[in-house]
Image (tube, rainbow, N blue to C red; front, side):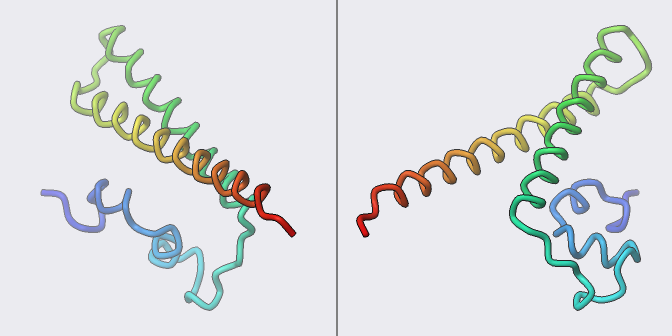
Amino acid sequence: MVTNETNPIKQLFKPVELQRFESGTIQSPDDIKQESFVDSLKGFIGEVNETQIDSADNTVKFVKGEPIDLHDVMISAEKAKTTFQLLLELRNKSLDTYRELIRIQV
């Protein structure tokens, strides 16, 4: 049985600050370092890249016949797909916002 602490689905959707607080890397919410938008975006792009690489590795392992469950391959593929779609939507919204700012007359 999977408990709440080890449930990968709950861990996936838990806010990063809460994950850091529960893991003990920070002492309290007041100690949370303020990250810039660029740092947050770079971190998110890195996480998307890691999920893509993990998905590709799991697929290669499955194709080679190594001992990996099909559901693990499918879960990693869907996770990679979802995070990439989120990244694309963030990019699209950012570009739309930039275009709107350019149209503003001073």
